[in-house]
Length: 313
Length: 247
Image 1 (spheres, rainbow over the protein chains, first blue to last red):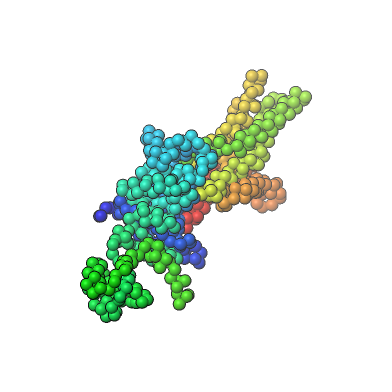
Image 2: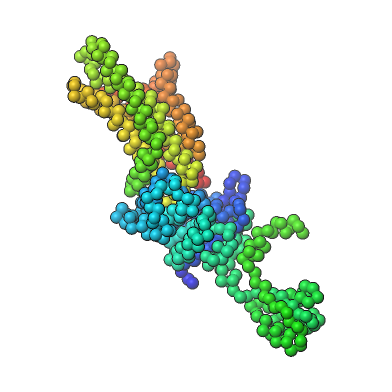
């Protein structure tokens, strides 16, 4: 997947007075990728997104959107950008059509094409039947959709969404996720969320931010691949540990009790079949064989609770 | 330019979908109408007040226009308070900040939207002296100069109000701050009548003294320049303030 690079952030840092909110964050996003930005509250997700969108100047570093520098040519860079902030930037006194028409105009869509762009955005976000309603009278979920429609109305190559599914009901969440996935095929999308299954369902890459730093960045298919580092094995009549460590591709054995063991495997290896064959031949009484796949949740907790563990130790 | 007009027309619409604009127009109209009626009553009670040098246009125009400057001073901060404060409070300012428009286009767009509202306010006031056209000969030039002066004054109020609105998140603070700033620049005029080396300087700074000529129908380039510079200064200040916010 070697699409053109649409977002490039180089060594971004941001200070609020003495507080360092974001420190040395670098991101690259190609066309057709959806990056999930994860992190506990106050980790610097929103600050990073504001910097990507030019709403906040980085104290250090540089942002390139579609090859244009946000610092040197903000208007050219913002032309390729759609942004839904945490709080949707709505004018409550406008109705949906008026508001979206205004947004289309702001993003330089010519008068003749505005109506078509508004219709398209409304259809994409399921707003067609709300077109004449005042935004102030819409429910939170619909307001969120209007915010999303605003971010995609000009079909920008880069879309930045700060917690796009907050306040939506489960059906709306499904719809919005499907929409984001569809957008991700043609555009580059960055979205932030605390909801891990959401990131898992939608994103092609994940970055975890903690205390202003990127502590983990990996492609989703690598995380979800059937690769595992260890196997939990349950045996009724276990042999001694030496026999277990003699199994092929096994580099370490740890007893978890009388009948359970954790076997650490060599990288990229799958010794399950060999273990079953060995257990059957030597009559170990195999009752459990379970690969330990790391879930996103485990990675998240491991990467973001460093302080807690350090204090406990 | 296109962006500025887009922002301006949206701003104009937003002003007129809010009840505040209609309330302001209604109150202004009632008060102006009262002053107009009283002025006419005075003329009819004492017609000899008018002579070859002081016509109906001067008398009526001077009374109403002079009175309107005070009213505008009171209401313009209310009209400008929302411009940036409220948008910042509700977060909608992000829409403008993340759109491909420059800060000067944003500020200018807001100002032009407000300018549309000023024209509506002036039109409603202008109708009163103009209604006398059916019964007497008016010096339209003088009335036009008076209205033009009022417009310049409104623009100055608007620019200063917008600037104060960029300073705070709270619309009410923007209103009281804007009112304070305007009143201060207005009252500088008082110092102009004190004996002192700087009397002339104070006179030149004051918002009020530059209006006097225009009200009398004298179109003086220096007065017009004063108001335009005043606007430019505060609009520039607004752009600077918004730029600071991102850093």
